[in-house]
Structure formats: structure tokens, C-alpha cells
Image 1 (cartoon, rainbow, N blue to C red):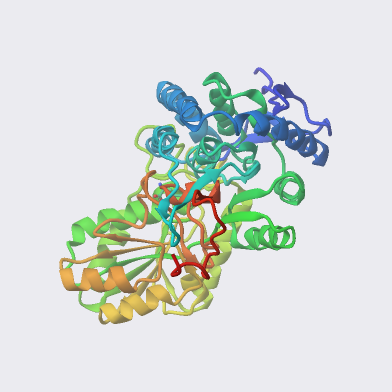
Image 2: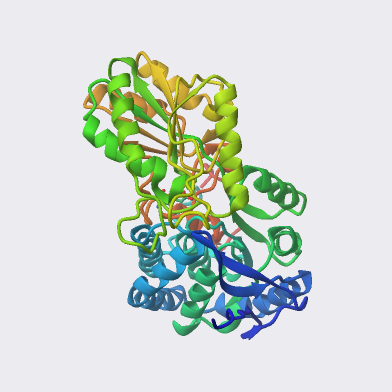
Length: 499
Ligand code: UN1
């Protein structure tokens, strides 16, 4: 067997070994004995070199016209398209989700690239009337500086592109710290950015641990913009530092998303939705459906449909045809799921299906856990309140839509929600009252599109959005210009009505 390849950081225009000399193994979660590569365990010195180089890159890139910056992103989209299948396979190998999903993840990157390319020609400001005569008032967007991007394992291509592409089109330079679990996909993204013609010092890739590399990036005084997707606990730490250092910060964190199924819903449609929402990506999505809120009139029938179907899902290597659900990302993730199953039992909920490690043929060397459905869950139980980030669905029975909305809103998170109904009145009530950043009607809790804002309320985020047009506000500074051509001093608020 050939020994695994040793990968490098991309710093100051070159692929280089880490200053520490240390590396970590990237393993396949479906077959943990398989080492896919060795990646740098970088240190603060690597971050410092990357930031210094990115500052130089920023000086030139920020002066490159935005439409030309957009052209680079257009080529990135073309290159991602050409390599879609290959990247999807790399991604499945390093993080486990099935090939159809990793291909979708790459497609999300492609969509984000083409959308960013066009935004390069549209980075609008506003021109508005001045309250004074012979005076113009307008805004335009300026690049900010070096953006530090810290990304999670579950969408190894999509989430980095959500952050990096708008940051770049807005004229910023990027230092990218991907999750330790998915360093290979991150490496390919950087290769593609370079091949597309991005000046080498505008993108820097520093691999390593969050506590070391992520921390150094967040604390670095020359990185004025930080974007972080990950756990709410880590997000609080990042937020504390950024608050102290007055940094611009976008946080995208936990979720406890619910699918509501009313008594008039198309149950077959709702079934497909909940299976995809709860067990796709093995439940490891911020937008995963982790609660199912069902009207009492259809509760027993629908729960039975869900359990029968969940029990039939095929676990396995995401590369194998016929696999529905891949492994969890690593041992700790599976332990956490096991712990929550024990917590749910001790709280008095019933495991209706699953609830155990899956270790049948071909599964023993991976972090597999059976799709699990808890029934008899009541609002306030920990399995109803806390993010598990695994294939565990908690079912809550309700008597009407008002109660369903109250249950949905009774958690600290607010990312996505979904309602299955045929009642237009109820749908609009829910669209208004569900306290989430994203609500789906007759569709699951996942399904965000690249050109619409993505994010949540309450402890899911800090008020910013990824994707869509709103993210361009985050990565640019709005400057206001007043031009007075009256030839005399005109005092705002004082001379307004005088002339
Ligand atoms: C996440 O869950 O971390 O719509 C991101 C969705 C996906 C992206 C999810 N396109 O849920």
C-alpha cells in the first residue's frame, strides 16, 4: 500500500509545510483505518505569515475593478463544474455523506460562483436626493481588508464558497481555515481559485486545529473581518474576541429545526420531506430536521409511516450505490449521539426505531448510527431543545397550529422551519409567526439556494446572513459621499429651508 500523500498550506503564494513540522491524519469516517492524507497542524506563525501576505494581496486586489474580480469567479464556476464528480468523490471519502449530496454540495459552490461573478457588475450603492439644493448624496461599497474564514465539515465546499466568493468579489483578501475533517476539499477549492487567475497572495490556506489556527486568526489585529460557521459554544468564544477587538463578525451556528405536519397535509409528501430533512447528511446539518411536530389527528399514522421508512434506510459508504445514510464524522460525534439517546430514554421518551450503533457487515470500521426516532417527546426535554447533530428525530404531538408554532418557537435556536399543510390561511400564519430565518411550506427544513440570504434568528446567528445579496453588505464597507456644488457653505439641518 502506498503511504498517504502529505499536503501543504498555501501561504504567501507557495505550497509550504507548516512551521511546526507537525501533521495530522485525514481519515475516512466510513472506514476509519483508511488514511486519506496527512495535513499540516499549523501554528500561529503560519497564520501570521498568511495574514502578512494577504495584506499585500489586498492592496492590489482591492484596486482591481469589481467586474474583473467577478470574471475570476466565473472561471472558478467553470472549473468547479468540470471537476464536480471528482470533488464529490473526494468529499464523500473525507466526510461520509452520500455522493448525490456531495455533488449537490459542489453544485452549491458552482451556483455561488456564478452568482458572485454577476454581483461583480452590480455592487450597488444608492444615490438619493439631498435635502439641500445643488448637492448630491450617495453611497458606494469599499473593500474592507483581510477576511478570516473558519468553516465546518458538513458542507465542505458550499460553506467556504458562501464566504470566500462574496468576500473576494467585494475586493477583500482571504485567509481560509477549513475544518480539520475536510482539508482535502478545501485544498481543491484553493487550487481552483489559483487556476482561475486569483492573484496568489489574495488567498491563503492554513490547515490545523480551531483552538490554534482559528484562534490565532480571530485574534490577529490585521484581520478586521471574521466569518465563522460552527457550534454555538465556539461561536460565543469567537464573538467574545471579536467584540473585544471591534471586528466585523458573521456567526452561523446551531439549529433545532422542526417540520410541522398538520392534519390536512399530504402525508406522503411530508414523509419524503422528513426523511430527507432528518437523515440526509446523517443529520449533520445546521438545517437538519431534528423535531417533527405532528397534529394529533394524524400523529399515530404518520409516526408509523416515518418509523417504517426510517428503519429501511440503507447505511453504508457514501460512495456505494444504494447507500441512503453515511457515517457520522468521527467517534466523538457518534458518542454524542449515543449520549443523547440515553438522555432521551431517561427523560421518558420512547425509541420507536433505531437508537443503536450500526455495526453490520461493512459498517464496523465506520462511525455509523441507525436513523433514530423518539416518540412521546414533550416540549422542554433536552432531546427537544438541544442540537444533537446526528440522525435523531424527536416527535412532539400537538392539537393545533398555534400549539405547533409555540413548540417550534420554544427553543433557543431559530434557523429553519417547515410546515406541511393545504390550508393557505394556516400557511400564511406560520410564515408570519414561526420565529426562524428561513421557513419552508410543503418542503423540508433544508433547501437553501445560493442567491437568497441564509441564516437564523436567536442563538443561531448574530444578525448577519450568508448567501444572497445581503452577504455583500457584510463583506463591504459602505462609504457615504456628499458633493456640494452650490459654491457656498450650506449647513445641513440648518440651511435646509432657507434657500
Ligand atoms: C448547513 O446546514 O450547514 O439548504 C448548510 C441547506 C443547504 C445548506 C445547509 N443547502 O440546508
